[in-house]
Amino acid sequence: MTLSGGCNCGQVRYAIEGEPIRTGLCHCESCRKSSGSAFSFFGVWPRASVTLSGDLACWQSRAGGDRFCPHCGSSLFCWEEGSDEIEIKLGTLDGGPSSIAPGYELWTIRREHWLAPQAEASQHARDRPKQD
Image (cartoon, rainbow, N blue to C red; front, side):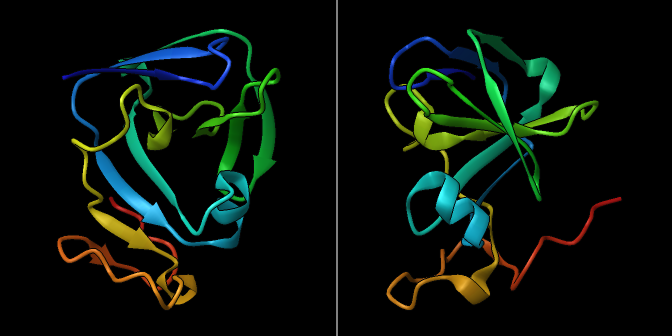
């Protein structure tokens, strides 16, 4: 699988090789504010599978470094320095994320009452348990 995406103005572009390690929806307050929506939809890939081009700015959040385009403000990625994984905000994919489904939901205690749980996704009241 090869996917591509970028920011609103086109200054930042990325390409992804392979399947995501995991995908999810997050309903936490930080994700709401950075996405400007009721939740964030993201996928996690090995950092080595993603090629980036363009200038990025960074805001340090609880989840790591939120990367965004300094020209148009599009929120694109999250990763911690030295991590071998990158979290990509799936709404930034070219053509949208319709071929990818969430595998889990985080911070469901903050999910809006009018949003139904994703039937095929595992549910976590807060953060996902750390995997060994």
